[in-house]
Structure formats: C-alpha cells, structure tokens
Length: 502
Image (cartoon, rainbow, N blue to C red; front, side, top):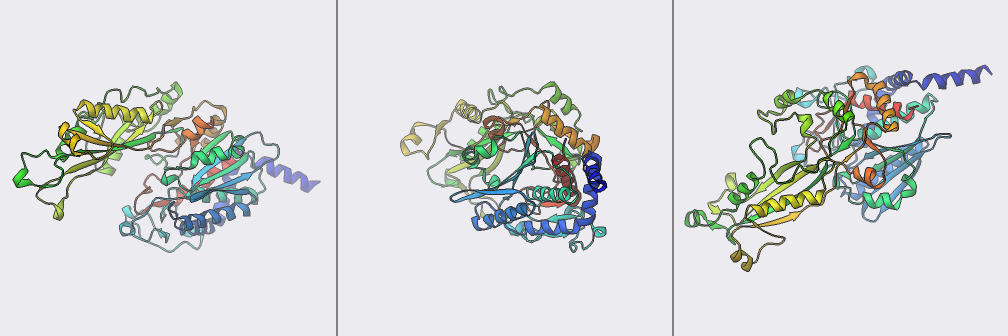
C-alpha cells in the first residue's frame, strides 16, 4: 500500500509545470551527450525531397524511433512522393488530441558555399560569425555550453523539433509521468518542395486527422530579440515571372543602341512603377483586402519589442522599406523582386542589346488576401503601364502589333492563415508555454514566412499555431545552417510541458 501511495504522489506532483520543467532539466543534464549524438545521427541523413532513397531512409529512421517509445505508427505513401510519418499515442481518458507537425525534408545544398560538409554535422564552440571554431562533440554534460552550435542542413529547419519530441517522450516515460492528451505526430517529407501533395494526403486520411483539436507546427525561429515566441499565423505566398522583349535576337549595341528598345530598361521602369519611394506597393487595390487585427492581437503586437535598430546593424541596412516598424510590416502583403536576368555582367558582359529581360516576383500575403486576385491586380497594373500581356513568347505578328509586350507566367500559391488567441485550447497552450518561457514569451500574430497552414485552418477547420524553437540566426535555407544548443534544450522543455498540459 505504501508503494502504491508513493507512486500516486509522484504522478500528481510531477504534473505541475514547475516540476515538469525541473525533471526535464535533470533529464537533459543526465542524457545531454546522447541527445546530441541522436541529433547528429538524424542530421547525417541527406534529406532533399527529390532524393527519394534518402528521404525514405529518414522516414524509416523516424518511424523506428517513434516505435521504440510505444507510438503507433503508419507510413503514409503516394507513388513517387516523400512519405508522411504518422504516429499516434493514445491516452486513456484523454479529452483532447494535440498534433505535432514537423517536416523532415530540407532545402537543397551547394556544398561549395558551406564551411563544412552539410551532411557531416560539425560541432562549434559558438557561431561561426562570432568567431566560433570546430570542436569535438562533447563526451560529458560539463563540456556542453548553451551557446555551442551544431552545423548541418536541417539543423534549424526542421529536424531539431523531431529530437525534442523524442526526448520529451523519453523524459516523460522514464519518470512515469502521465501524458494528458492524445498525441498525433505528423512529419512531412516535402515541405521545402512546396507541400504539393499535402492536401491530398490530408483528404485521403481524414480518419486519422479529423479528431485532432489543435495543430502545433514545430517550425521556424524564435524572435529576433532572442526571446521565445508563439506564432498564430503565417503569410500566404504566390508570385510570377515577367519577361519583356526588345529585338528578336541580341543586337550589337554600337550599331543598334539608342534605336532598339532595351528590354532591361523596359522591365526596370515597369518594376519601379510598382512601389513608391517609401517602398510601399502602389498597385491599385493591393492592400484593400487585408483583414484587421483583433483587439487582443493589437495588444500582443504592442508588447513585441522593437528590433529595427538591431536588425539594421546586423544586416547592414541604412534605410529599410516603409515607415512602420518591422513588426507592423509583417502584417501587410509584400512584393519582392527575387531575381533579375538580362544579358550578362562582369567578364561575360557583351556589347549587345539583349533580346529579353526577366524578373521573378514573389508576393507574401496576409489574412484576407486571395492569391489569384493579388496576381490579377499586378497584371492590371502591367496593362496600365501600356504592356500587352502574353502567356507564351510572342510571334512576329504580335511583335509588330504591340510596342510593349510582357509575358507573365503565374506561379502557384496559397493564402495566409491566422488562428485566434482567444480559443480556449489556444489559451491553454499560451499559459503552458509561459510556464517555461516566463514573461519573455512573445505572442506574434503572424510570422513573416509562409507555411500551408490554410489546409488546416480553412480546409480542416481546426486551430493551428506555430512553436518555433530555432535560434533566429540559424541560417535557415542558406549555407552553414545551424542550431544553438540552448535552443534545443528549450525545445525539449516546451514539448515536455505541452505533452503534460492540464
């Protein structure tokens, strides 16, 4: 009887947030070296979505790790597509189901731009930009410092959450703590390739996802102020390419310059007409459909620290676009010239009038903006500048009929999504996250980047929030991607707290 009573007391005592946090810290101290080794093993597997053999290796490894922890698993497959790793951890008597979304694929790499091989995780004393040097992987917890980093593709985006989830399960089970919700693990393998089959995966497996009460997306960095944050929305994304035309073949600039239209100049003038001197988009109607923030969201926004001066110093920017703060700019749709191409530069430059010029335009959308309508507005602006729009390269008849021609190739896209902070289960997550992060926790209405959250909020009609854990300077999508060790520990504490949330 005494043993049973002691066990009961342990369970009740350990479900408080403070003691979960304490037990997690103790577990990290005891197992930190092994956690880093497990992370290294996962990072050593190349994970570009188009590399199906290696993607399948990743999926099989993750499935195996979940099964070791008693998770019921399924590998959701479509022919020629990265599989989704699905896991279910049922809890007797649970009244809600929480889903953790992570993507295990990563961006392609150009090894020539990396300091080390991106598939050979390298441990550093601190960030390379701060003068960090490679050091051996720690062999004791005393040798681990929270400012140390591990460099590898997907270290920050997005394999770290997988390790934090697995470790949280280990901590909970080793201490015989009660998990308080049914848990679903939904690990996607082609997020960085556009999640093209995600909608079909969800529709084909509605029986696995319909009972989920809240989706939690474990992706993205903490705030640039280095404070932890919860994020309640993302911007949508779409875009297009615009090609302008001069002569039907490149011409000698001496013989034909000052006579033949220069496509680069035509395109530059067109692009310049899309924004004013402050960097605001002046395309008619571009901002008209923006959905306003609620009073609670406005309050959260007002409490976010201003980081503009720090960002200007960090990024070497003297005069950012717009007159609002960085935080406010994320709540407006954007238009960005992602790339320009016409002729050649440097040693390859030739004395020619090029035949064409092309610009790649990216648009980030906020709640209320429809991707197709935003592209329609841009096309209407192009026509307003005197251009005739075509979908294919113009033939001779079209060239002779119109003085200014623009080929517009529209990209796919998806809308923005935003979840209310006032939903009861969302309030529970906010409260539990504050138990870990304290008053430093930032509540961000919308992330600057894009994720297909609309499939969950609009299609499945479920709330979805983002739980970022990576350091803000993790070089996401770029060379020398990395994860700060202190952020990894924070992620483990957060996952442990949410899995035991009352």
